[in-house]
Amino acid sequence: MSETVLLPKRLRASEVVTVLKDIGRRVESGPVTVDFRDVEEFDSSTLALLNYVRNRLTNVTTVNIGGALARAAESFVSRPPAAEPELPPSGNAAVRALVAIADRFIFQMRSLGRFLAMLGDEVYHVGVYLKERKGVYPGETWNQMFFMGYRSFPIVCLLIFLVGVTISITSAEQLRLFGADIYLADLVGIAMLKELVPLMTGVILAGKVGAAVTAELASMTVLEEVDALRTMGVVPEKFLMVPRLLAITLVVPLLVAMADVVGIFGGIVVARVTFGTPPSAFIAEMVTAVDWTDFGWGLIKTVVFGWAVVVGAGFKGLTVGRSAEEVGRATTESVVLSITLIILIDCLFSFILY
Image (cartoon, rainbow, N blue to C red):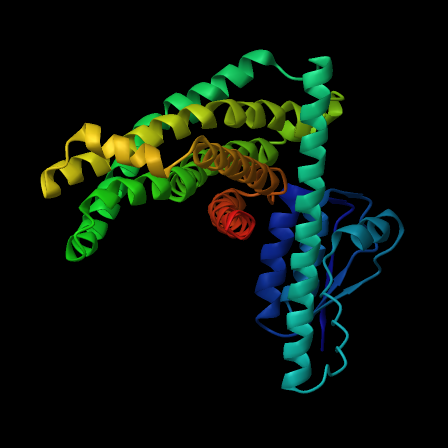
């Protein structure tokens, strides 16, 4: 036979502790019925008691819950989650694989569309800024030029010098077989000016500048600073991206010029050590093979690479998820995207030039 516990008129935190101990003692001897008919004064501890009794004590029954207590319990007492409806079968493994591939393809096409839309917006914003000179903090362009140009100069020159030395050493052994030592100058000049310097500079900028820009913009997005700019009526794609695009456009010619000199200097060193070719003879031969158009195409390619790096970094940074994990993932994806774009654009330039 069930034993009844009649609760007092005032049931708050202090009374709930006593009632809970009483119910615990009675439950050990058999079923218990908890009667709430006299309860008029209650608080959240009463609702917690009701929730505990209903969900945790299987041999305890609650009765006479009405009035204000019933309405409060309706919104407070937790209920087990509703069972999720069973999904219809989606077919065999081949159909599921095809659906997964289609979903992935659609997602990639949508991402490509958003990237191209952002690229178009940035071209428009840069044009408007150059015409009106409004909407961008001028000092930020100088700050970005210092970071992208001056801070990148040492690593770019070091790696390009090593690339020039490596290419020269590799080529020298083959040219020696045919007695064509002097043509090392032609090979180094054309390779460095038109291909290696633009490509290596773009890859270095992707790893150094692209990752930094993505991390900075992604952190601003996660911390809701980008949303704050929109609230103030500022276009983030213009305010944040235009200074970086102007900076990369202005510093790339200087980086390319210095990298060309350093890379050719590496070839001169190898030619002097390997063949005993004087620097004057090396340069004289190189001038006969290369032209200003070679330098110009290399410069154009590097500017395009720089834009691809900054736009890709901005795209990943401004569309990042709202978590610290997403910031790291966006930074990694930005570098991969930038290098992929550089290789694709370089292939397109190769079809055009050759």
